[in-house]
Image (cartoon, rainbow, N blue to C red):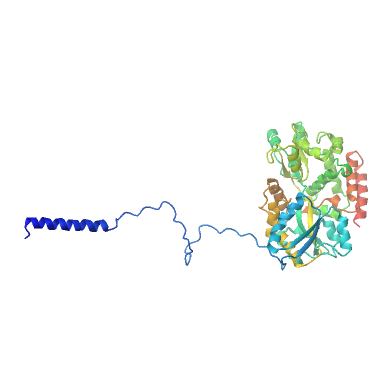
Length: 455
């Protein structure tokens, strides 16, 4: 047994050693609850056991250079200039950057320059022109499918329009639609009017406006030597409602004479509105003497002189310039002509006189997913390429693009398409009719010119 003094000395020493050992050991603390998802690992696991939580960023559609090499040249002629030309350059930039091809452009409004080059055997590699030239140069042009065009990106009617003698010779690159009616949503709301969905709805709306003491239409068509073109556009839209796009195309080909009963009906519908002051500003005199731009302004003036104006897509820009305080979608907007079985409009077509690799690259690009998306992104009017959908940035182009995409047919302007001065004959028939001339006689004269031009 230890003596008391030694015992206490030994006990104190043992306790001191225990405290030192305890101080050196790590403290045991409970694991904290996670407050957020753990960060993803910085390196990929050897094998994924669960699906990734996010999708990888979508890559841009690839551009196929079709064998073209850096420095290869493409000569082209087109009618665009200024801002239009700048837009085309923006659209072609991804192709130029990807393939290194060199674009050699020439801008002219003179079709005879292109004609001279073709006849001399020195055509450009590419021309952007109208459908008339597809038939005119059919023996000189390269088929689009042989050049690598993506046919699946176009509605069947586009390929039909661009086909001559069974060969697909033209690719539509740009379009603007005319089968639309401009109005003020603010005025419609204030007056209790709704956008019509059918032709019967439109007719009923027109009659309601008249009953309310409002003038439905502003139909002025004065345009110097071209007076009548806005009226002929309106009549063609009525034909698209009542007869359909094939009927219009048959007028253009000459299969249906211009004095056919269907044409007469369209004139009569138009005349009811265009000649009566209850239906249009100023009646027949106003229709003939009011400038086509002034006709647009009358719908958006304060107070408005009319409720609606049927006009092409350019009208929105004219409203914005004339009335900068008005807001698109609130103060001015448009809707498609209700009941139309197709649309009419202007279009620009690409035709190729060469099949070299750089030309193939251009054709393949503009007809591809990437080309359609870029055209819409730039906003150079509308692209007939179906892959343009979802890429327009301007609200009006989004809406016009939807109308074009849902159309069952596309028809060019009758007067612009039939050669031999028919356009002038059509306008004369319309002006004479609004002035009070006999309709049968007026249409018969125009039909004579049509028959001669379409032999």
